[in-house]
Amino acid sequence: MAIDIKKLLQSVVSHGASDLHLVSRSEPQIRIDGTLKAVNLPVLTGEDIEEMTYGLLTEKQKKSFEEHLELDFALLLPGIGRFRANYYKTLGDIAAAFRIIPTEIPSLDDLNAPEIYKRLIKREKGLILVTGPTGSGKSTTLAAMLNEINLTEHKHIITVEDPVEFIHQNKKCVFSHRELGSDTNSFSKALKYAMRQDPDIIFIGEMRDKETIEAALTAAETGHLVFGTLHTNSAPGTINRIIDVFGGDEQAQIRTMVASSLVGVIAQALLPKVGGGRVAVPEIMIPNNAISNLIREDKVHQIYSQMQLGQGTTGMQTQTQILIKLRKQGIISREDAIQYANKPEELKKNINFK
Image (cartoon, rainbow, N blue to C red; front, side, top):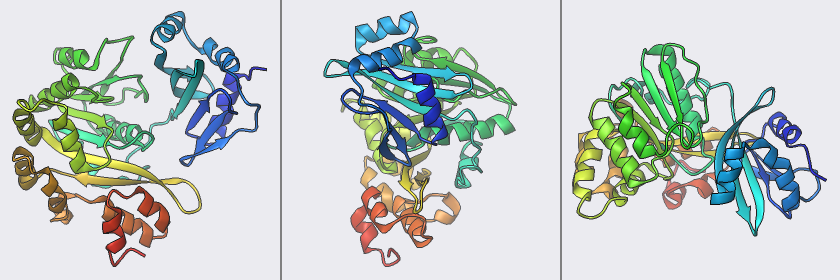
């Protein structure tokens, strides 16, 4: 007995969940506040899931999925919501994951974002990275930053995503949303041709390969403000991830490009709040002369100590500091703080951490 997928997605939205998972040999599962919970429905078979989900696809999407066994796409269901969907195979059966994309784009104030975010988006050029694992709120933070620009500046903003998630209405800015597969064939090619489209700002949904990273750095160096994402857990670790993509003979040049173009890294995690809900924990690195020199000289391991200096003027903060602050306010539990910490031993040794 197949379940009506649209009614199920409507239920997911009304429960305030972030994701829906359909996997054979399991009942449908939804993620609320970061935790998976089973829905009170029958265990699904692969045939059930295929019958539920194939009707959401175009013929082109069906052909692509059957050829590649993977499919990413955005889905708009009027009256229900917008979703990022991924279809895949598990033990020969089709499976699907749906991520809910809020139709109302939050402001930076709605997110209680640090004041430094509003200073960063005023930059005329450079590279701003928002990083973190899947489900850490990167897309929402970036959407709020672009929304702030849309409310205050007159800019042309090009987004390149796979798939397009948040759709911005043109307020003061003009948005050109480009989706991989339907509007462009690759991130790197879209970035190459973006230079001819007179952009002020470019948003790259994911900097996943050498060509894309190199094109993003070049765009940032040549007078554009570039936003991008990476799956890294710490601000200094982001530098290593970028450089390690390149061969040894290229790394010195890339370090120089990163040092000159990087204007901010926000490494974000979402932690469960005591009593329900989740709270963002952003580690923020704003490269100053000292940090830029450390990047050029391949001394990334020394960046963390630089992030602890002069924070009142730079806006920088370490993850440990934010975890201690949230714990003192009773917003997060001690156990969750330690579990999510990049430096759990440093956290436990701090005299202010109870």
